[in-house]
Length: 166
Image (cartoon, rainbow, N blue to C red; front, side, top):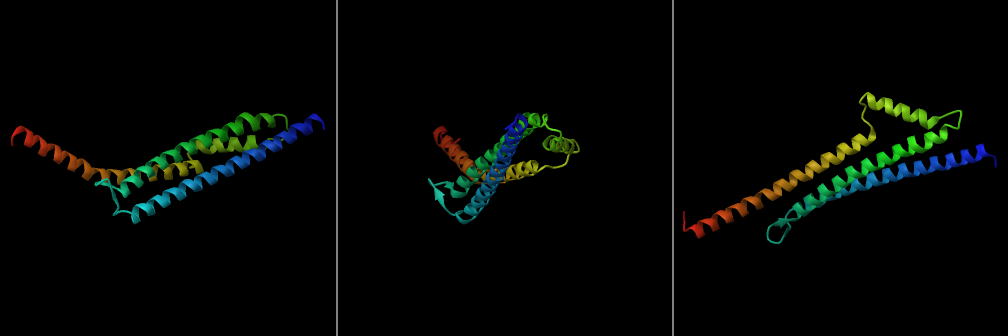
């Protein structure tokens, strides 16, 4: 096997690895989407369950939803970073040895699209993650507000009793 053929085999192997990595990214995104949908249904069907006298199942699932949404956002970011590294730092450097550079050209096209503010798939993923985080956060606030008000009222009542009915 000559040097050019060896370089091409390495290039081919790395390109397959990159595609497998991107496929794992899609599987991971499907997991996060499914988890969010399941949490929404769990909040709907367990809304009347109360733990520890005040904490609702809805609050627990909403907190879990905020956490999962944040993890999804971070996951999208890390996958994007790693995919960019695979493109620019590895595949493009190997392509320098070839007369045709498809991934280099593709990455240049993507970079040009980003300058024109075109939404990329990762932007949509982040938008969904942020939207779900806001939804779950709003549910948390709506569930926590009565608890905070009740605690405040108890504190005021206790203060009134301690101060002698001021």
